[in-house]
Length: 398
Image (cartoon, rainbow, N blue to C red):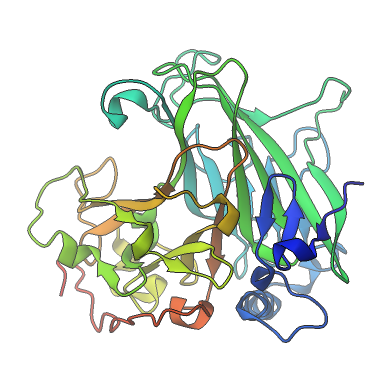
């Protein structure tokens, strides 16, 4: 089995192929609890409190296909799960990686967000003219279907169709960690010819984080960027973008916007981002509401939010940070493919980090029930905005 190790020359960072994960995100047995441990423990206790005991009787927190034809869903019962378009899988359109979690009274994982793949090839012209969208392009492998096909890579020596992923044991100092890895192949893009794949993994000591490493196939044009974007912020009504010295509110960013399309402003460069002690860049996005599932008007909203409130975040490991790293968000006043105003006012829809493409670079997408100020233990002092007191049901903002 492949073994990871701690290399003293790298200040305690865990070596994992092309990435190193800062030691503050690894819970060593001889160290006091850090913020990742607190988040993991909180999520686990929440899960124990709300889910029936039979969910634990299966003897493992891992979720993955057990036989041919099972839904393509992988992850942790005590953390995050991800999936692909498949019969019986997590709902949603083609061309998107599903992200979800287990919740009270539900035997199946519930959708929280989607992640789309957006390669940008090198060449002249505007960025937008050189990029492609995995969920919007028509498939050539499946004629008539919108959304590029995504599937589990299968080696030539593999003959079954279970697609369980690779579950291995690795060593991190004195700790023993399980890692589940799945390679997701993406149909070649038509708009720009890009051909890419994504290695997705979850470690048992960080069950609420997806590590997504991006790669170009040999027949792909040279890439400028290979962006992964969380596409459905309007579901949880994400309005607060947490930067180093401020929380940006979508309603104050776009106070006069009355249209029905996407709207955005400039990106937020690396100096604006939160950093960990080991150099990781981190950005959080949260709802402005105390409990979105209990906000007045939620039950009649175009998209009814049914999950606990979650902080969603991107983290770029320090060794993968490029000088041009930046955060980009856009927003919508009305829900996608409708004219229904977003409950409580305009909210962020796409939430992503962008930077120069390096083969194998890793972007981490994570979730936690903790608020950013309780989850982040870096040097910056987070500016904590007051939560919404009342969110009117007519879609206007306070």
